[in-house]
Image 1 (tube, helix red, strand yellow):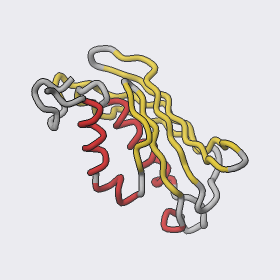
Image 2 (cartoon, rainbow, N blue to C red):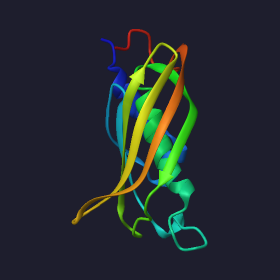
Image 3 (cartoon, rainbow, N blue to C red):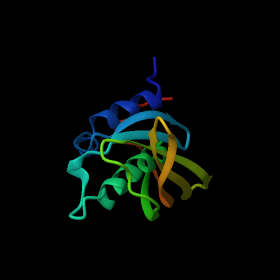
Image 4 (cartoon, rainbow, N blue to C red):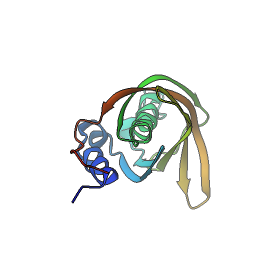
Length: 147
């Protein structure tokens, strides 16, 4: 019986060393879509005591990678345009959602948003428009017959 492509992708994402180092966890994935989250900690601050832009970019990039590779085809980033809108509170939950907007044989575009989620609701932290180049190559870890 063939393994589900999304299950294989979830397994690979869970094993990714950098995402694990950053505490980034996958919450949902579908065709051209991914949701991930992390808890913002003091280890992610810059010298001003605010969240480091690289920490937010990493969260965005992880969701972008999951969403853009969710069709089983290798997709590599061409461009990410990030707008930082607010600095989250330390220890807050940051949730990122990547949504595919268009996809052709070679190029796909995504809208990505990061929010701080707490008892007061969602507060937008960053937004991103991103573009990938889609290769004519299946993801390496997918077995033959994976659906």
